[in-house]
Length: 422
Image (tube, rainbow, N blue to C red; front, side, top):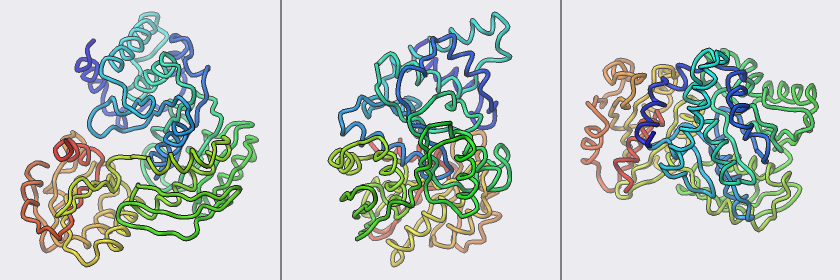
């Protein structure tokens, strides 16, 4: 199939969250038919609720700065599915993506024909297998894998990594992972493996205790990020700089915005220290890291900032950023979200910070209708937009000193980025 056909087939498999079939049997069979591409290279495996994408991007950038031939697998994408599979810091091209799809799809069809699979692998399973095939074919040395959902039964959990990483855990995807932080943490902790160093970001006390017990049970050597600290912190609207003090001392400049990125950077540092990456490469890699759609300023006067704050913890980080750097300016918020999110809680965090609130639906079947959001908005200057494009037309009235935020869903952020970033 060509690229558009392969993407159409993947989408036809159904939404990757709604149609998720957690378990490793199907992906194991598929990878076996493909020659087990996950068994002949080094992996860093990253789970968590918030920050895992940023941490993955930081680790990969520093490895690349150290001269490592890197792969990076993340989800979801913002604009095009090729963004999920990166080699050497760049998304694979459409031809490489479609060829990998053909290989994986043919393997799946042969297993289906033999009656060894109950159904075609899911969207996420298929793309995971595609990434592993690409990393093998392009002789990637070390690949950073972001867990898709949970950890224990996630398709990425077939790998035997050199380091396992768990970023901060909070509420999200409760229908799949359980309604308590403890149950969610148990699922995330399912990526920990015997003898494999486990880097644990700072967590809530009850979560940290549970993960530490889990690491002890499986025999995973613990590498707590609390052994690192940040001093002389300077945070700006466009990033941060600080002195990282731990087993080594590093001068860190990070262009990813938000004070929470300091903690994410410390997590990445702990991983890179375990891997023995040089101070020079770490400092250079973090200085050059990019992670679009997360407090990303795509335009100025007025500032237009994209942030995929899709759960309460992400919304709190965004709210902190707005209060810290835009407290004295008029804030416009374009907000749209999915039905499986904690909409009422997130609205309570973000909506009061906006002087103008425009409610729009991402172009997605799971999107919440703007009219439904309006009913719970309780905001004096809230209105609906028929589309994101319409919402962007409304904010054209913003003054040069105003600030516009597009948030709520990475799908909405991706649409905005496609329209605003050339």
